[in-house]
Length: 251
Image (cartoon, one colour):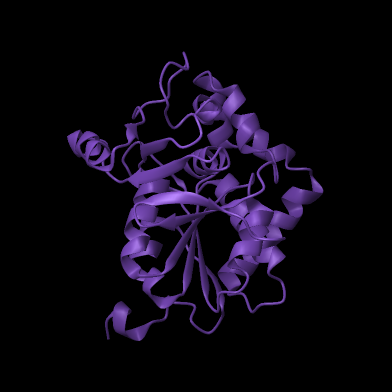
């Protein structure tokens, strides 16, 4: 019996499910009504910052010439595929988006968040992007869905394989914990336990986790601070067609 037919990995006995990365988008997104993509450092933080400034983010999976072609076709700006220290360009650095003009349309290629969102939308599920900054707003926006898959995106090892990222797991667990009235899979419950521990420590460990250290070593300490601001943004971000937009839901 194939893995696809057996369904042992789908967590379908529970309404709140959690699994990692692109594989989760490919194999589990079609099983649920709503998918939440969590990439704290930094795609989801960029999406929240931009959309809460009344701009929109268009995720793009590939960091090649097709990104420029897509941006042109969409009448959008194209973010740099590399973080920029100078601030002269918009990029995956959240700090670079704090001056993004309202009404802007920005194509944001990324190997994790954009890639997962790009794949998940093919399932037909409603797609949200979540981070610490818009965690409570996201909970309010997704609470009414019958089935929810939360995908912590993780990062990449040098060989391209998935590196589970603590910050994504904590934020994903925060979503699960806030939906405590629902039935959560063991995988989701474990993330909620990690959230509770991180919350008790006021998220101090996240400031020194591997992803945060990487950003600091590359000169992006300000990005770490922006990424770790809990509920700094008041609106959730939902994928509508090709772009993420802010949605307002009463918490």
